[in-house]
Every structure is written in C-alpha cells, then in structure tokens.
Image (cartoon, rainbow, N blue to C red):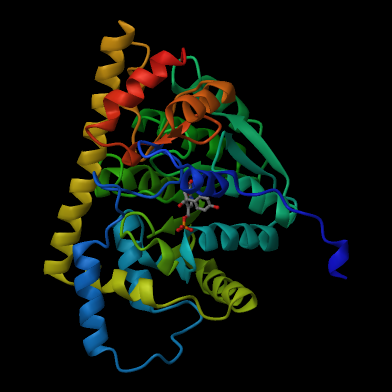
Length: 394
Ligand code: PLP
Ligand code: TYF
C-alpha cells in the first residue's frame, strides 16, 4: 500500500530553516521562518508565561481530560482578547485547537460541512499553508489581488474588484493584521469597504489572526476583526497564541464563529466540538491553560502586555532603521514601504534570483518570494542587509 504514496512537496519555509542550519558561514543572517527572535537571536519564553508555568506546576492537581471544546475559561478569555465587547457573547461559539493552524483547518472543515459548494477566496499571496491545506481538503480556491510589488502596498482596487466576484456562501479569507507574507495591511477605511463588498455579495469572511499585538498594539490589531464581526451576518475567526504568547510548540489556538442571529449558536457550538472529536478528541491543554492564567491574572497580564509591547516596538524600530538605511544608500524613497508595513514580515517584492543572490553572496536567508522576518535582524545586521539589498541590485 505504501508504495502507492507519492513524495509531497516540502514546506519551503521549513526547508529554508534546515538550509540555514547547514550553512557554515558564521555571519549568516536568518530572516526565514516566522519565529520572533531577540537581538541575540534567541526566542525567549515570555516572563509571564514562565511564571504561569511555575504556578501551574505547583497548583495543577490533575491531567484528566478537559472537554471537547477545551477549557471554557480559555475560550472566554480569548473571546475577550480578540473581540472585546464588539459583539454579544450569545453570538459567539468557540473551541480550543492545536495552534492557529488547527483553527484554520477546523474552520475550513466547518465551511465544508455548512456549504459544500463554497469557494475560498484568498489574498495573492497568502500564507502557503492556507493553500496547501485547502488543496489537501479539496476546497476550490480563487485568489484575489492583494500585494502590489511596484508600491509595496495593497492593490486595493484590484482586491475589491476580485472580492466582488465571490458568490453568496463563498468564503473570503482575510489576515486580521500583520499580513503574512507581505506585511502590507488595509487602512480602517479600506476594511470598511471590504466589509461592504463582502456583505453586498453575501460571502462569509474568515479571519486568520496570528499576530495580534505584533502590529500596532493588542487593541489596534484586533480592530479590523471586531469591525468585521460586528458588521457581517456571520464571521469565522481562527486565532493563534503561538506568536503573541511565544508558545509555538505548545500548539495553542482557537476557532470562533460569530453569528448575529444567536439562534444558530447551540448547533454551531456543537458542530465545532464535533469537529474536534473527529480530528483529535480533546485539544491540547497546556498552552491554553498558560494563556488563560496569564489573561486572568492582573499581574501576569500586565507583565505579558509590557513584554509584548517591547517585542512589537523593537521590531518597529528595526524596520524603520532598515527603511532609513535604504533611503540613504539608494538615495530614494523606494523602500519607504518597509517602514509602513506592520508585523513580523515585509515582502521586498524582488525576484527569486535576487533572493538567491542574497543567500549565495551574503549569507542572508529569506523566503523565495522575498519575504523577510524583521525579527531576524538586529542593530548590527540592519546595515549589512541594506548594503546587500543595494549590492544585488534590488
Ligand atoms: N496563520 C498565519 C497567517 C500564520 O503566519 C501562522 C504562523 O505561525 C499561523 C496561522 C498559525 O500558527 P500556529 O499554528 O503555529 O499557531
Ligand atoms: O509563516 C511562517 O513562517 C510562520 C511559521 O508550515 C510557519 O507562520 C511556517 C511554516 C509552517 C508552519 C508555521
């Protein structure tokens, strides 16, 4: 039987991680995988998470199963974090999932159950895992225009024109903040227009929120998601705790649905729990428990927010430094978009050949589509990257 299997394409981002490890050059720079790194290249455990872990070790008395939806307190606190008081709790269903990826996958499963004819509209480009999961599940995908490599910003006219082509019951997948892989995001006014377009065609928005707190702050980054949830009849939200709590390997995420009509909530909540049961029974608990402890404790929460803010502003400084350095070296403003991007990533918008040159000649690793992880930089490497970008003729 196994001899019928075909080799599957590797995840390019993860393959790049290995190539970086195998490179013997001491001054190599890793701008590949989307993991936060401090100035020393470490991905630290956040202080509040470490403290919660210690407390948990002392206080936890059982490892017995939780519930199919995970601990309801995790859902309650995550709903608050993401949605604030934008919608009534009576309209929200939620289950804990293994990471944001689990939530995305489960969200697509829900779509398949609710509307087998749904087409999923995704930004061009989007996180490669969206495409690979959708393909694996056999869901039809249609890209909508998003990144304009001339300006480094959003091709908003193209985006609206393409979204307007979706049909009732189709899904429009949106990045809630800090677009991966481009770093280019919509303004508040543009979000309003996207919502109007989605509602006018009767499509359903699905928001992937993997970087809340990495862009303009915890509240600001949740703004668009709240606006969508408030304004559309139905919304699907897949949120990840991997980045903003730094608990990547704990696999912590949440899938939420919002329906203005609370009449469907019991069935929706039951369906989400059913989907958890079909795929893995109970979701992982350790990371979710740390998150609920941090969010529910005043001291831990304040410390977490402060540390997250340090992470966010540190990345902002680095991206501004890079934009400034490139302005000086190029004698032009053509890299100003780097300062306007938000989150962990920026897409340079250059060819794969230039990206390869950066790797071969300068030991600088970024994803082939010219996405760089800003957190992979520090004050010493920013000038080197800027020089290399000019040197290879970007
Ligand atoms: N969605 C996007 C856009 C991402 O970049 C990520 C990456 O980390 C995820 C979802 C999910 O991450 P995880 O499954 O590690 O929580
Ligand atoms: O885009 C990234 O780099 C992160 C991490 O299969 C990631 O989202 C990359 C690949 C993958 C899962 C997570």
